[in-house]
Image: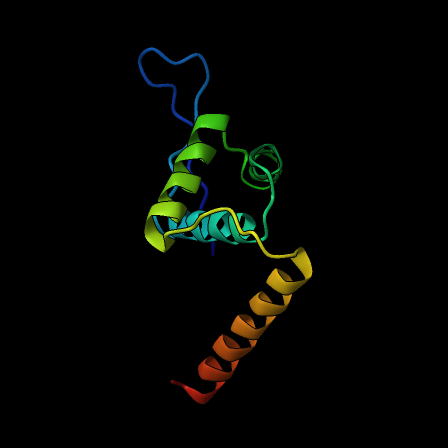
Length: 102
């Protein structure tokens, strides 16, 4: 069961927001890393995060910075088809490891 937090208006703010849990933050950083890996532009990533998570511009920048710092990500220079193939191979390997219990 997923519990949602009620937005809180803190001093100096005009509208309330609910802080993400650690699990939600980790998921969002992983999402940012994936989108960066796929080569989406900064504006596209901001739009995706706004639609799916309801985050503001600055918070999305923080998630992208955490993803870059954690994974050492830089803008990929190889074609999108190659990146998607590489990603699919990684996901396939992770799924196999999970199913084997590794």
